[in-house]
Image 1 (cartoon, rainbow, N blue to C red):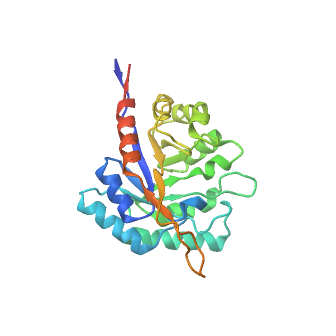
Image 2: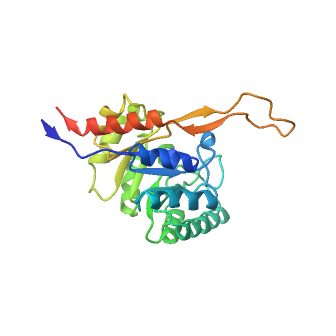
Image 3: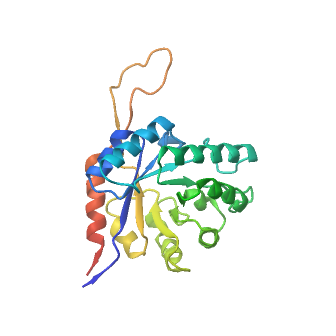
Length: 251
């Protein structure tokens, strides 16, 4: 029997209760965002401050990482949008976030390294995760090398596949190339059953939303909108953490 490195579990959450559930069930960190149904957008500063307080109360200083994405509809941003994202990052640092989650591409489906440099500069000492925009590039493995060279701390990726388990071969390539300065985190359709195979691929972490719908199915009035909303499912978080712990032991 040999021991692998522990696999971290990151939970994408949209509210303070989701943060508290992730803490209680043993996740290593959260990606805080809103509008997960659209792929996620930057959350409000009020929510970030409340999430940081919840983590601080639990004695966790490296727990709240925040998505910085100004709109849905792809990852090719104008200079004005990059300026907005940089301003958001400065506000997130002031609010006490531990890290940011960003991504920017060029129209030719390559990493926008100039935009990334501007965002990293705004981040200062905050940890920088590059998100699944990498999976929309023409060559995710080569893009991972570029991001490592650019000083990104963590890469969230499915290996270019719709679901991480289907991209396990490329995830293994990403995890084995270069040095260990950039963590590889599997994300995209991660299921509990897939965690052992993803661990064998050599990833450092897994990322999942663990969400379910809640709320009454009633009319919402003339303003429209959905009568239900996402919440973080504590049972799914607990099962993911348990699966990651078991995966740390290779027989």
